[in-house]
Structure formats: structure tokens, C-alpha cells
Length: 157
Image 1 (cartoon, rainbow, N blue to C red):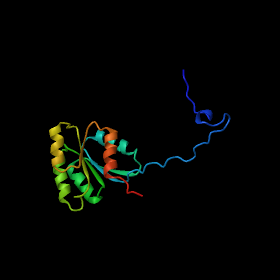
Image 2: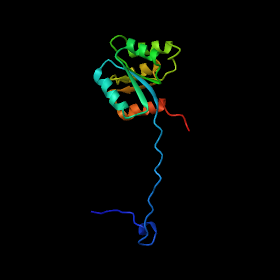
Image 3: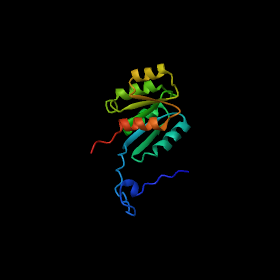
Image 4: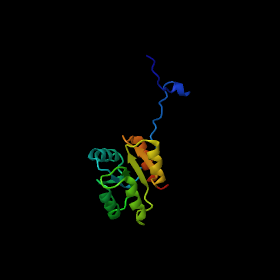
């Protein structure tokens, strides 16, 4: 088995020269911060979202189980990002989005559809209806975090 090691000699230094240790670590990338509201009637989906967003300590997650409670939660504590299931027991995700956009306090909050409907027509309809992005279930964490980073990017220092 071949082993590769960086030695002083390999770096052009005389044998026996100690290698300097790198003491400066690169600065960690800034993590997004903010409040996210996820509206989904399926408990398992809410638990999964909770587990995923626990990986992002700068985020606070609020959960709602239907359109009416989602609208009430958004009005009570306006989120920085909305994640909406497209099939809720009392209204569709598009209907909830329309109600949110009609509220001046919530009209500008980025809104991402989260749905098992992965057909191109479903996605196009949601985007035409005013959603800022569309994530399909099962949720790919990289895709979710990419959208969160896009909408909740920290301000440049």
C-alpha cells in the first residue's frame, strides 16, 4: 500500500526541518439567522423539518398544522421565511399564499412550496402563483439548506 506524507524534504526543506503547524483556521461561513414557519398537516413531515433545522442553530422554527393556524401564526409572529405544504386539510398552499400576500405585514416574506407533487406542471403552477421556490418531498437537505441560505443569507460584514 502506498502512503503519501508531506515531509520537509518534499516541500524543498532540508531533512530534519520541522514543518510549521497551521494555527489559523479558516473562518466558518456565516450561518443564516431568522424565524421560519413551516405549515404541514403531516406530523412526520413536521418532525423531519424540526430535525433538519436543528442543524442550523441560528434558525427558530414555528410549526402549524393547517392553513388557518399557519396564517394566524404568521400574523402573530411574522417569520423571515415561510415553508408551505401544498395540500393542507382546510385550503391549498396556493390559497394560503394568497392570504399571506394580501396581508401587508406578510406580503414580502419569501415563501417556498414544499410538496410531494413533483410534476413539472405542479411546480410551474406554484411558481406562477407567487411562490419564490419549490422543494419536492422527500426533502433533500442540501436543497432545503440551499433555499434557506438564499433567502436568509446573512448581511455582508
